[in-house]
Image 1 (cartoon, rainbow, N blue to C red):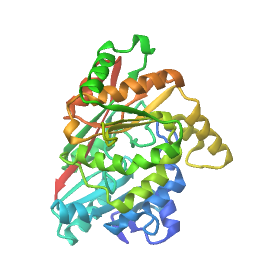
Image 2 (cartoon, one colour):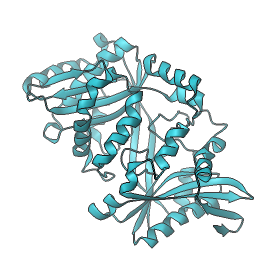
Image 3 (cartoon, rainbow, N blue to C red):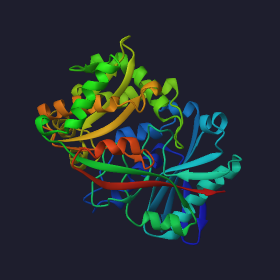
Image 4 (cartoon, rainbow, N blue to C red):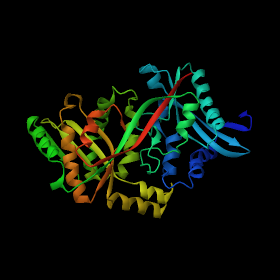
Length: 379
């Protein structure tokens, strides 16, 4: 336990303290119309060293900040040893970073992460991020009047000012879009024609699913393509084989099969995929982290009856990147969205330098409504 003036920093040692760590944002954002709580049980499992297989190659230390016995902030110090040892990035990560508008509190928490980094001979600090690319990342710097999705973070607008005042520089930046989905007849003619052209030119096939069981045989290939799609990006850390089952169990239950589209080559090998979901933001806002009977019914309703979709992941095999196969995926999604009743889609965070995918959105009525960033500092 460390005391800094009237601020006390305590390292998490027990399951009760971990629950307090997870529940702190509920107090911090109790009056926010836009903060959407994660499911408490899942959040605890992600942070539990006995449950999450990421701890086979990662370490984590959790801290709470108190003033006069009241929790006023939290932070996780994370080290992904695959990143450090294999990718040679001497980085200590920080995540699960929330705090009141008090710069002494945010600095005291960040200093704990820096201390962990120094103790492990690391050279810089970066965040907010999770353990790998499959976790939520990026501090919101624009779009505070919009709800977060199931796969993104929300934070108060003052967070970014704290980072600047503490000497942190912006490293990666992501953008997000809202896309209007028209009737198929009115959808971009360019994408329809381009989709047909690419299918014929490369002898590709479209895969559409009606049952979750049909998707499972392709999941391992999806993770492989995911790695090959993003392995050149600055934030990439490969997902280990033993983590894949964990993510299957965590996310497959939320997926409506029609929201996943795949493209294969003439050998039935996966060329590209897109995973989208119905938006769970409104349902999650109402259940506030609790999945009791009512909560399950709300999530089930959102899964099957929804006018808004949320784009989660896109992967493209390296030999087909920049060949237009994403147009095939979105042409098929367009048809399904119309059938399902989706009229708006929110994209996942895309690195600002990923201009190829952003050019595709220009074919739709769009609104670039959110930006988020990670911050870094030498230690």
